[in-house]
Length: 280
Image (cartoon, rainbow, N blue to C red):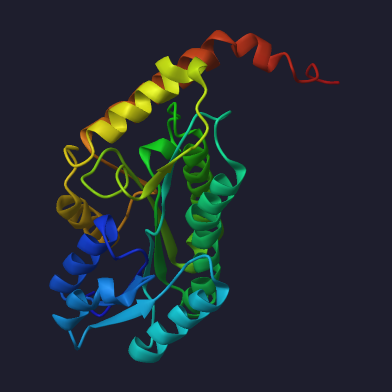
């Protein structure tokens, strides 16, 4: 099992950095990817025989192709792809700037999808592999002030679920990671604010943005423990499709299940009534 090779994106900070360190400490090989390899050279220097630094901007197809080729040239295989690279963005839906939203989708969703498609031919050929997509509890539950960020992560969740059903028979597993608040740079420098401010959203989007920004650096989630949880899931014989990380993520997901059930049950007859009558 320790012969597995990991390719991890977004390793300069946060989840990616801690995961890369833990994966290597655990005896695996890893391609440690970042837009600026200077940010990860210290990690690679500690494991010269089992780690390489890979320059990777997931919005650039040439970088993606080169990262996969470099990993295969060094290690001969890719067993685990972790799509961790991502950014945040704060703004009510009406306030959000299209250019910023499109940039976020390019990184959080299309970059992730392109990484998957670059690695799948190799995994299909050897009939094994594990794709780990880092989403968010915001990929299951929508929150004010981060609606378009939620949209990117809902997209990741849906893509991952479909992918798992397409590739299970090929021996390729898929896991979506859904963290709540963790002490990373996500709520700090990694998320821009919309420059548009509409006062009518003061008590909803603006209030939640202030709360999230306000506890940056004091979130209950520990990225080191999260890294251990991700490796545990990958090592499991039957890994989960969705892995929630953090008590707040579990609470939010369970509340969402209750809300769904409430609406489904209350509108059951209307729902069924949309079909043609039986026999017609």
